[in-house]
Amino acid sequence: MGIMTVPTQAAPQTLSCRAVLFDMDGTLVDSTAVVEQVWGEFAARYGLDLAEILRTSHGVQARDTVTRFAPAGADIPALTAELGAMERVRTDGIVPLPGAARLLAALPADAVALVTSADRVLANIRMAAAGLAMPAIAVTAELVTKGKPNPEGYLKAAANLGVDPADAVVFEDAPAGIAAGVAAGIRTVAVGPNTGPLPNGVLHLKDYSAVAVELAVDAEDLTVISFWL
Image 1 (spheres, rainbow, N blue to C red):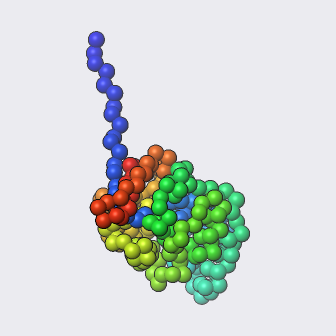
Image 2: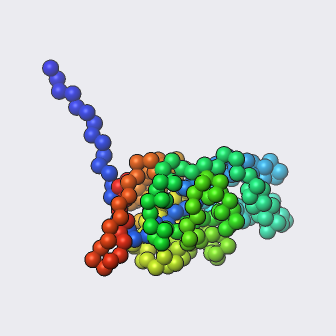
Image 3: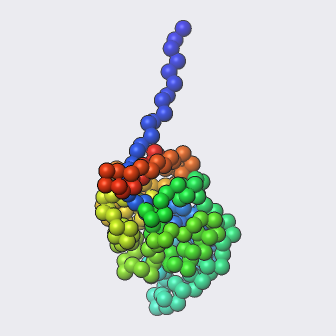
């Protein structure tokens, strides 16, 4: 009788750090329904290609997308404000990613930051709609001069938490955000189906369902966060 071989499951990857930096939309919060609805209305108004807008807008600030796609002569600040107002009143369908609430609850509050291309008002609304606690440190759109893929937001978050970028881990879902994390010199984990091709060294997760966390204290009495991914 022949020998039947059973494929072995890949061993979990382990990452240890002192701080964890999360993007919001697509990383902690699934806001796909609202995002597609709002940008769909924008595209229809100006006869634009919605698929192209969605392909390039994910993870970047709304003003950058409006600037790229709005017709010549459009009032960019007014259009951006209008789209922002639309997003703030639409929360139907916003849910947390699987395992996100459990993961946030397991992490030390003083070692977590949010780095999002949304402004503070929208970030508060979407985190609340998803039933997730807002981290004390949140670097939102109005706090940076350059949005993702520029690393400014992630570098600012690491500095606010008092950690070197090399001692942090970023969780991101979009190419622009992944590029920002990598450019900041922070180990980056891609989450979900919309990451695009991944840079070398970037791990990928479907969601947080199987992620385990362990906390320890090192010889310097500092907290070490270990992930099994």
